[in-house]
Each structure stands twice: as C-alpha cells, then as structure tokens.
Length: 167
Length: 205
Image (tube, rainbow over all chains, first blue to last red; front, side, top):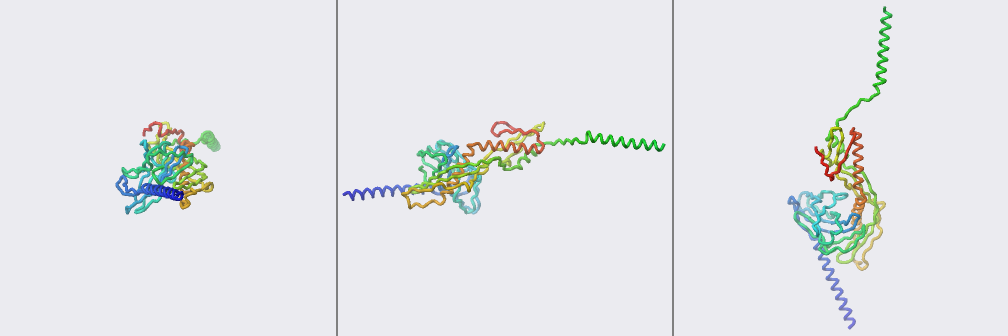
C-alpha cells in the first residue's frame, strides 16, 4: 500500500512538472512568435522577440530587449531605432537609447537577418508594476510583460533575463 | 660757394636720416591693428569643424550580475567585475546658423547642442568573470555561450547610467564651452556667451 502511494505521488509530481514544463515551453514559443509588420513607409519586415533583460541602475531601471529582425525584401531596409517605442501600463512612453554601440539607424540587408539587435530603455522604477508593450511596426504593439507586477527586488547592477511574458 | 652747398646738402641728409630714425623709434614698433570682421556663418563653420567633440572621460568600475531564466526550468548566473570608460561630449556638427548670434560690439552668443554620451566601452584588461553557476537540479541544461556577452552589454548600460548620475553631461557641456571659447578667442573673438537650449533664451538670426 505504501509503495502504491509513493508511486502515485511520484506520478502526480512527474505529471505536474511535465504540465508545468509544457506550459512554460508554450509561453516561450508564444513570446518568440514572429510578427510580420510594416515600416511607416509600408515596407514589410519580420520582428521576433528573443529575450528581455531587466536590471537596476543608479538612474532607475533598465530594460534591454533583444530582437531578431528579418528583411524578406530584395532590397535594403533602414529602420529608425526611435520607431521602437516602449509603453508601460501607465501610458508612459520611452524611446530607446541611441548612444554607444546602438546607432540611430538599423540597417537590414536585402533578404538578410539581424539575429541579435538590442534595444535599451531607461525606465522609471514603477514601469514593471503592470503590462509593458513595445511598438515594433506601424500601429503594431507586442506585449513584453503581462499585467502581474514584477516583484523581485533587484540590487544596483543586478540584471535578470526572461524569454517569456510572465516575470 | 661749392663748399656751402655741400655743407647744407650733407646737413639736410643727416637731419632727414635722424628724423627718420626718430620716427621709426617712436612709431615703428607699434603693430598695425587689424580689426577682424566676425560674422555668424564664419563662427558656425569654425565651431562645426570640431565635429563630435569629446570633452570628458569617466572611468567606472562596477559589479554586474545577470541571471538568465531557462526554459522550462532552472536558471544560470554570471557575475562580472567590469571597468568601463564613458566618453561625453557635444556633437558640434549639429550647430546651425540660428544657434549663433554676433552683436554689433563683436560679442558672440552661441547655443551649443545638448551634451551626450558619445561612447561607452569596457576596459578588457580590467574586466573579468567573478562567478558563473547554474541551478544544480537542472544538469541537463547547457551553459549559454552568450551569457557573458549579454552581461557585458548590460554592464555597459549600468556604467552609462552611473556616469550620467555622476554628472558627465554637465561636465561635458562645461568643457565643450571652454574649448569653443578658446577656439574663438584664437580666431579673434573677444567675448563669447553661451546659452542653454532649454533655458528659453531665443536667438534671433
């Protein structure tokens, strides 16, 4: 009898872990879903979120978004970094940083792919208290974070990365 | 008669030479004053030649940690000790003729572009991995080969934020004003006044 209970318990734990793992894999797949979008001029390109990194610095919080950009056109496409506007639950808007390694223009080669394009935002401390979305094309927003508040207390210089919307 | 003429001629020549020497002694040493005409487009061109002027460098050391959530379970952590350099300055190529005004008395009033962080980079010799680990109960999860690179990029953001917090922008602005002032003084401008873009002072062309 004891053995049966132990086996049942193990099976229940195993199934629970399996279901949880499946849900998380599904969540990650949903997060990485490709989004066919358009520039303001009407040119098609494809955006895929790959990862978000959230961190704490002296001036507030930093959100780094990694994107995979694909150009299906037989000609070069130039995107302005400032088209990628971040919006939080309080309708605060943030523009990405255009200093250092991040140039103001993103050049997408003809039929080419940029595997890891980085957008960096310096945001207010309360930005992660709710949903956060990113404008990736003309009138097209992608959810970076769900409505659950981000509860982790990060120290200065501490960063965490996620490949899903729930963080 | 001939002797008298000779005497007067020689005396006249000696007097003329003496007079010339006295004139040169008193007035010859003075430099000719050239008044340069300062016009706004010339000043703008002169300043624009400085282009992206880096005026200050901050060197900052930080400890940066990055924890990466794995799919479906577990996480991987890296701790970096980084030293980075932040260069601040002003992009003077953005200066336009509307930003410079020259008054009738030769005083130049200029509105420089906003200072900005020009470049952030890590000092590779002083940057090293302090610690790297992953959750013990997910041994099947492979180490992410890009985690260190991600941590370095995050560190750049942290270092830039620290430099801004420490006042690199105001420092860059002050140094840029001093540099431009010196440049214009060399070009003959006696007085230079700077106004900030955000203080509401209008510069009429």
